[in-house]
Length: 500
Image (cartoon, rainbow, N blue to C red; front, side, top):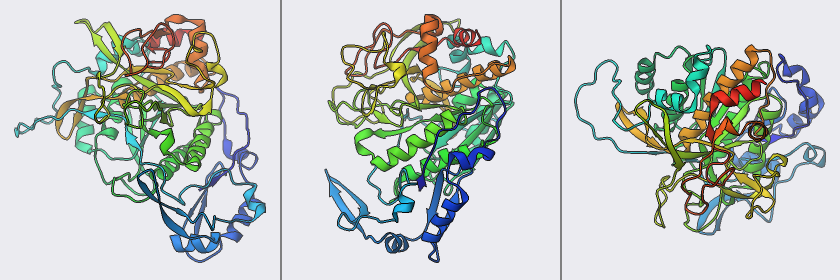
């Protein structure tokens, strides 16, 4: 995969047909022909994205070795074994092509596989025959109506905003059981659509992540179009699954080149420690998220991780999760939300399990901390966000939402799910409703993470400030913090502020 992006401005709030700008944004026909001439061996197929910024090239490893004048060998580093080009014979392309290449991925599998940012509590099977629709979740689990009332989603519902004509895009590396999804949708009287889109093949596993994301979004935006971009992320794969993830992001771009300002959002509940990712994968995904945000005006919400301040899973190793740490992503942390009998928000704290070692298993708590790769974005370089531990790097997370004790119907049973994987789609649904309302009023919207910080400066009540709890290293505090960012959504106030 190779890509190059130049800046292109599109005015928010107005229809855009980006294919007419593609030759300004990406490569022109002449340059594309040069790539085709270079990769002209039999058995190589090329596919240029509609934005003309992403070139997918498929061939056997032996063919790539021949064209790029390299060999693929196995390497060992810090206890990990991976394939990559021979350091003594690095891949070579002509200089006239090199100037157009921003990142090349797929030539190694150094990056660790993406981790789902969720944990599922086991549910014992009763063996009893289920009725046509089982709508009786476990006690003490949070339902969509609970979240909606606690965070003010229902106030937007009362204004006729249920996600009509908006699209919420989910990025998945596992599949879901149609019967699980249908049962859930029947219980909530869902009126939108759920459309799976296979990218680089279809998923082999049903691990619950895709199921969780679909149900979180459907329960809060009941008339939205949910597009589930899914790929094969099975654990026995020897390929770099991040290439597939980036192909999913590029497919979302392709599918929306003529629908760039429709208020859509993207939810990604995957991640890995920054230090366990290749620079090429990071660069490629960063470019895709930039394009989604800057050109197609989609807010990209990414779960901040479930191993507290230690995303690597090694207790004491301060690290954050990518792509949550990307400055074009809106990183979403997790909380423990408690409600009263009237479904009102009663108490909320940063989510963690108080662990002091052992294995993370996605249960240590909300991810947060300082990036080792990305500098501080301008919108974080301000009073109330800068603090005694700021060091000029990107701070994670930006915002947060409930990530503990959520009701999900999975493998024919209701269960309890936790993780920032739930928090990201909660925000993706909420922002889709906000965008829907702004569009109905004829107003523009800002898709970048900056909008959340600008809103906080204008109206401190747009978020519920979380001041209790920790992520095993950083403590929740008044204002922005490394556990829950700016806080959880007070969606009605957030919408009113942006409307003004």
